[in-house]
Image (cartoon, rainbow, N blue to C red):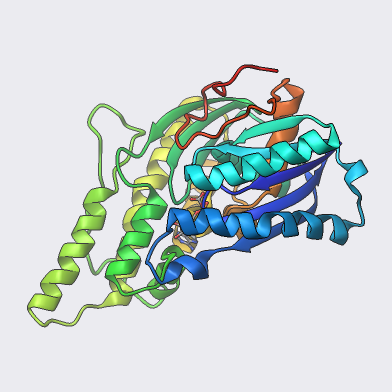
Length: 342
Ligand code: KG4
């Protein structure tokens, strides 16, 4: 079964061809980061317009690179939620047209379910159940992955997502957008103990997280230093910041693994590329005898291969949509898609 999959939820346009869920034949990605960098964040209308411009070229290139033809496509999959609504609608409409023209099923896919599925591509032996920490630009979730399509949220951020916190902190440190990678690089020359930054807790909800206090603490530190004309050790602040984010995420995810007893932890999403977080998870999992799954960097960020992978399992559960499929800016990954089955 070959699935043509489409991802356009934020600032990456991506089209992939995936065979039988786990074999990526091609994964075409166009990053809009340079278009948005000048504004310090994603501008939704620019994102939608850029998706419109490149999406069909990426699909043509995917077929040309693999030597496949349109007749080889058995189904079309698309991210339908969550994300920027205008951006999502571009992918959804492209996928609807393709499925209609080819006469094949259309499979709607939740973006975070896709991020989790990136681990199936990276680790062919991985099967549910496991705990997944999904950390991206818009979401920070600890998920009980009971089965390929049966997931339950154990905890989530109450305010900023971890990636959003990286991006906003990077701006304060004078680093370009998106800020996760530049902070990661800057942190390597710093002392992670130099600045004591707050780690948010939510009373009575041990798996929930909060990052807005951390972001504010960095802003205050930077402003105080500026007002007093004191030098700011940016590398150490970046290192201390990465430590604080990691100290928010790693113990909570490990608590969830222990509580559920699966012995398996997967990490997913763009922030999973962070070297401090990866290292801390390796140490914690080794100490506790937990199997750790972290996708390679290319599969951590937004891509369409992960959507094609998840779509394979959604289709097996009979999840298909008609040509009235809509998109949703917000949708819980454990909810049913809010449309009538065709
Ligand atoms: O998963 P993703 O590509 O897009 C969303 O679905 O949101 O995640 C993007 C986020 C951005 O906030 C970016 O700054 C962050 O991932 N990121 C990182 C690193 N690389 C990307 N955060 C921390 N360390 C990194 N090395």
